[in-house]
Structure formats: structure tokens, C-alpha cells
Image 1 (cartoon, helix red, strand yellow):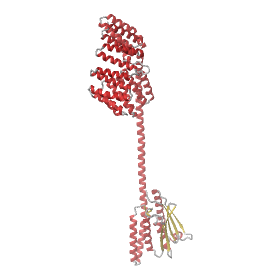
Image 2: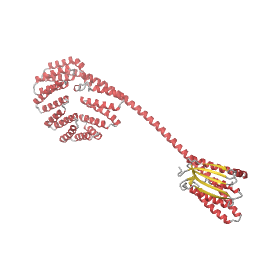
Image 3: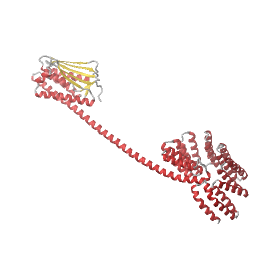
Image 4: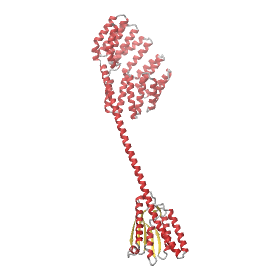
Amino acid sequence: MYNQLKILLFTLLFPLMMVAQDSTKTKSGKTSVSKKAIELTETLSESNPTATADKYVELATELDKKGDYTKAEDYLKRALPLYQKQKNKDKIASTTRLLAQIQEKQKKFNQAILNYQSASEDAMDKSASRINSNDASRLQNTSPKAQAEYLDSNIKILEKEGKKEEAVAVYKQKAEVDLKSDNKGMAIESYEKAIAVSKDKPEEVLKLKSEISKVYASENNLDKAIEITKNTISDAEKLGSVSQQIEQQQTLAGLYFKNENQDDAIVLLEETYDLALKNGRTFDAKKAMLALSDYYRAQGNQTKAIELYDKFLNDFDRMVQADSSLVDSKIFQVTEEKIKQLEKERALKDELITKKNKFNYVLIGSVILMLILLGLIAKALFSIKTKNKKIALQSLRREMNPHFIFNSLNSVNQFIAQNNELEANKYLTSYSNLMRNMMETSNKDFISLSNELEQIKKYLDLEHLRFQDKFEYEIVVDEKLDSDAILVPNMLIQPHLENAIWHGLRYRETIGKLKVTFAEENQLIKVSIEDDGIGVEKSRELKTQNQKVHESRGLNNVEERINLLNDLYHQQISYTISSGTDGNGTLVTLYFSKTTKVV
């Protein structure tokens, strides 16, 4: 019969146990697990990563207080990636430390060591780094003495920085180490130091006094243990902490039984049961009832044990309805499902955003690649176009040379026909010097003004040998011009000199004058070629049709080269041709950009 009642009791309580494990440990509306879970759902809905991570940590802290370390660890592991994504090193370090502490409580020492070490590396200040490093070393060292030294070091750091709550936790750890080494006096001292630090936290003081009572009980100093526990119950009543009062009364009842004071123990357990029933604390009532029934059964009083079960079953519905911890646990269970759903939705949303971003990156990358390719194609086309223009420019420049060579050979032939070998040799020598100079600069679009002046002089000297009785020439260069630095277009002046001599001066009956002037005007180089030949109009009248075609081609060549030079090198090259006032003579004026460097 007794066993059947136990099975029935288990059947009734099992569903509640699933939603309210250790619910008697925490019953706070303001800091309840369910409230923290609800706050978490709100931040998940808002898609605020930092706030969500903070709420994960807060919920994990509440679960830690309840002793639900598995879930606490899980929520901390969810918080860490969010902090890592935000690169919040301070939060990463503190959360990793919390994770290590919870893993230590679960005896997952290897994982805890790694996380303490990680927290030490991520810590923003030296003190935090040292504390985490000490904890990692403590877990790696099995010597109680060494462990105590690491804990003492941490206590010193924490008390210096005024971190009381953390210091209390370390004192408790130190007490546990002392108990393992059977140094109960040191353990009590550690608990008392923790009490001194926790003066402003009465709930924590009650728990610490309870631990001291347990130490005395383990030494079989039951009178001292009972005295401390009675004081603790009195303090709990004054504080209004029903949970601590019930817990301490159950502890005191156990001490009474151990001290063979059964009557006081039974009375106290019955009072505890009534107190739990009154305050809707189902599991505390169950615990008191089981302790009583076990005692009666041990005494062979099955009837009394069954009466207790009957009483509990009769009170069960009323207790469940009044037990806010069960409601809180049920709310948490429902909220947890909502959290999972919101996390799935967030993960899906993040996945969609990632895919969208990936598509955008691919699209942007493709556009950039296309623009680069278009740029390269445009650059290649521009380069080809530029090269073609340079080739055309070179071709046009070289087009002038055959005509010049043809005229020069005619002159040599003329000297030989006149049996004037000396003049022919002199002419050929001057011609070869000029051609050598022209060949050296034939691949250049621009040459220095000094080089151009040298070529002009050699050319005019050569033509003067041929037409000695037709003209004299003069070259005037402005002293302000730096002939070595200034660059001028190659072979652009020579055709105009040739025209002045061959189509103007050579038809004169008397010696004419050719004047070439170089000057600066409005930041441009001005070149004036002035002759007193027969003039443009008379020259056209005397020309054959073939000569007119050649002259037209020569001028076109000059204009094409000017256009190409202006286009390729962004120059301002231009020229004008005008006749003298009386129809005689011609003035050709060329303008070049004042250039010292060609790009």
C-alpha cells in the first residue's frame, strides 16, 4: 500500500517536475527566469544582436542561480557568437568567464580550463586577465595548497577592486578546497570572511551560515550546528524569506533526527509542511511530507505514513494553484519554445540577408569586373589609336624626306653638269651632315629648339649653295628663350622654308631676303618666316599643274601633322600664311605651345 501511494505521488508530481525543477530555490517576480526569457523574446523580435546577447547572459545568470547549469551553459554559448560578431572584447571576456564557471560547476574541467584561458587572453585589464589565469591554473593543479594560493590571489585582487559578489564566490570556493583537504577550521573561516563581505546581502548571509552549520554537523558538533541553524531560521523569519525559512527548518529537523531528538524533529517537519502549504510551495511540502513518512515507516507506523500521503493528496490541488513557481516555470517553458522559434526565424532571416548580400557582392563584383574590362578595352583601343596616330605622324614626316632628297640630288646633278666638282663635293658634304642630323631625330615628334635651329641653319646653308645669287638669310632668336629646354615639333618649320625659297625667292632677278624669327608671345612660341619673293599669287601663276598638286599635298601634310600633334600631345600649334602689302613677299607665322616636357 505504501509503495502504491509513492507511485501515485510520483505520477502526480512528475509533470510538475518537468516544468519546475528546483523551483523552490528561486521565487522572485522581478528576477524570475520567465521574465528574463520574455525580455529575450522582445530583443530577438527587434533584431538587436548586442541587446539579444545581453539578455542571453541575464537569462543564463538566472538559470545558474536555480542550478540549471546545462541550460545556463547553452544560453551563454548562444551569446558569445553575437559578441564576437560585434567584436566586443570586454563582453566576450566576461561571458567566457561565466561559461567557464558554469562548466566548472558541472565538473567539465577541461572545457572550463580552456575558457578561463580564453577569458584571460580577451580581458581588457590586467586584473581580470590575472584572475582568469589563476582559475585556469587552479583547475590544472590538483594540490589543495596550490589551489588555495590561487584563490587567495583572486580574493586579494577582487577585494582591492571592490568586487564583493565575486569575492564571496571565491571565498566559497576556498572553503570547498579546505573541506576537501579536511581542514574544516579553515573552511569555517572562509565562510565567515564571506559573511563579512556580504553584509549588505542578507539572503547570501543566510546561505553562508547554513554552510557553516553543515561543516559543524560533519564534525558531529550537532549542538553548534543546531544553534547556528536556529539563528538562521530566526534571521530568515525577520527577513521574510519563506524559502530560506523552509530550507533551514528542514535542515534543523535533520539535525534533530541525527541528535535523536525525534519529537522536536517531527513537530518542526509538520510546521514546515504547513508553512509550505500556506505559501504554495509544492515541492517543499512534498519534501517535508516524505521526511515524516520515511520516519514513520522506519518506526513501523505505516498507518501514520499513509495518513500523511492522504493529507498531501487532499492538499495537492490547492498547493498547485497557489504555487507561483509552477506558473513561472510553465511560462518559461512556453517562452523557451517561442525563443527557439524566434531564433529559427532570425537564422532564416540572417541566411536570406547573407544570400542577398552574396548576390549583391557578386553583382557589384561583376559590374566592377565589367567596368575594369571595359576600361582595359578602352585603354587598349586608346593605346592602339595613339600608336596609329604616332605612326601616321611619323609617316607624314618621312613623306617630306623623298621630295627633299630628290631636289638635293637634282642640285648635285646640276653642279656636275656645270663641271663644278668643288661645289658638288661641298654640297654633298653639307647634305650628308644635314641628313645624318635628320635621321637621328626622325623618330622623334619633338626636338629641342637648339637642335631645330641647327637643322634649319644646315638646311638654309645647303639651299644657299644652290641659290647663291637668289637670297640671303637671317635667323633671329629671342634671348629669353631657353633653346636647350624648349621643345618644338620636328620637321614642321622646314617645309615653310622650302616653300619660301623654291616658290618665292628663286624667281627673283635680284638677291632676296629670308628672315626667320623665334620669339615668345602670350606664353606661346612664335616663329615668323618672312621673305621678299614674288608672292603667293605670282608663284601660282608660274607653277605647272603638277607643281600645284605637289604644293597642295605639302600643305595638307603640314596641316595633318599639326592636327595629330595637337590631338596626341594637347598642343596649341597653328599657322597662318599672308602676302605682302604690294603683292610681293610672303609671311608665314607659326605658333607652338611653350613646351619643356612632352607627355
